[in-house]
Length: 337
Image: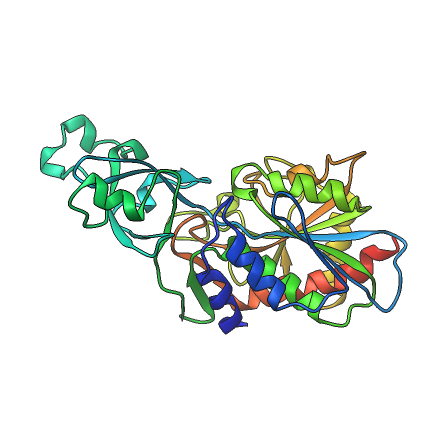
């Protein structure tokens, strides 16, 4: 799993630029039907040993947060904006890699040149620039035209007691779990939507859910964990090492109560570690899926992840396997409810 997760997370694929991730998935799955829609969603059907009563769809998004070049100065510095929800603080001083392969460093005005007011607030993306070592506008535009993408350039590694760090774990972890399910020997037929553009408004999921029209959707995600120093109680949201996270509500969805209970019961029956979120926060493809067509019963199962939407997403290996096990069991549990 570690090697496969490293391989898929190292790929670059922010919203609207998911091609490399999609091609990787296509080349590593064995399915009965594989199609790509007009938006770029990868829609997969895997025949199981039995036909289910309910048409089941699993979903995970291929895109990651990233950046887009918006302007080039006369002396070759690049202006850029975020693609998806990125706090500017996680970009300052970081190395970014352009889709052309050129690397650069994110900088801002030196602290001794800042006013008192500027030093007391976090700079916006308008106040940051990407330094790629270019000496002129013409030189920079050859490798970084307006509208081109840039990505966090960061290492993937294991540390501590089963911890894993890397970019794009949100939601390549969910994609990898679905790939394993497709390549396995499932009890029931199921559809799998590897979606695009989740990070900029769950756009791909809206189209995929309309196309597949499932009775039940199970979204596999990575979700915010705030189990860090100085945070206590419900504000921790969920915790690494406590297993799969099953949500009852977030900023985009009130989840199907029967599926929520079914997920917990299924986890307990199969000795799978499970927890819920202790704060109504965030959102995912469920927000678009559950209101598609005449409405789709939806459940979300997530890997708890620290430092989401940064170059240093951190998960725990045991939680990944808990989500994988629960997703596999939920296919059978939800097939005939």
